[in-house]
Length: 452
Image 1 (cartoon, rainbow, N blue to C red):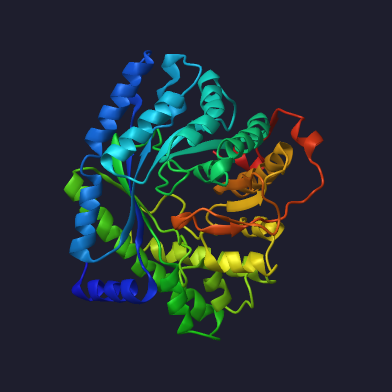
Image 2 (cartoon, rainbow, N blue to C red; image 1 turned 90 degrees about the horizontal axis):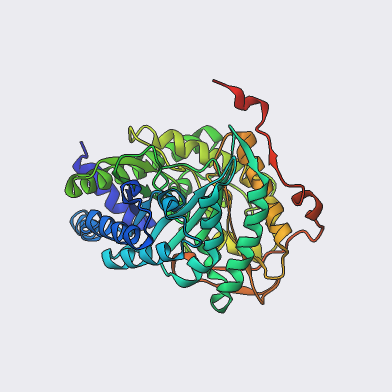
């Protein structure tokens, strides 16, 4: 039961610390849309999405008005298209991307995820068609997001796919170069991708999910920062307790919204993702939380330890507030979407290597990082391989959403707009990994994968 006191406390967090529900994401199973005819497939997909999500946006807006809780995004995730479209034997899935885009616009959501493939152990013919379709699909659509799972702790890393995705990311950058290569902001590669993630660009509806499900992603970096201001210079025990208590309160807000959305849409509730997701707004930053803990600037020695503390205690507090916590659930460190991270890059306190170290303990990985447009495909693949290895060995989700901005170099700034923010172009190690990437094959899973 949500008490009146909790509602009042929530209102204070909204008004004073930028608390919001970042997204209500409706997952939709499209397996029953499969058809050998591409036109029939697209009709079935469009009809199912528009029927299932017909009231999603309105319900979200109604809850927002009634409870006074900002709900920033309403989104859809679907079954990976490489599975749904396999029976067509088509040479391109770009027509399916257009259908997803039309359906997203028809129901009013800002993004639709699931133009995806799961290739952590190998690619089949349909997976290859999906992957080769990504650059054109993201260049010709507005709301479609794409993801590819390249590795897992159980299977190892598909290095052939890692190599190919370096090329695909570069091709996507070229095809959207007139918009500062923004297509890459809608493309993410994973190790250990979760099937119930409500956040874009990596959301897809897993094959183990129900026919339709409501997943909610909460946020609230500003709330945590404000709470930490009250315990300045206190010991680590006090610091941890403060983060846990705050995460509990934030997650309760998400639980309220998820329950209401589920009841009103008559769609089962899936999970709460209690990730702290920043925005470009002042005071809504993960970097500023870490600095409030005592760092002069994010990137300073101690940054990884501070992030580990934050991530762990967000989880500990959140799991007490909801019986169904899932998705990613931790702290995001996307550079372009976090004002504190942007400042740290600009003044040189953080670099790509330090960000990689931080991903060992954060919620995801290298996220929304702009790099020089002339970065080679092999270097991009090498960066991906490093992140996949971190995820595989540590049994956690890691991801790379990296943007080689065509025509720009270190020192330039790229403006993406909205929640995507802006980013300084970061320097990339100039030494080559070409011979390593070109070996091909699969890196086997670590020995601890054989638990059963």
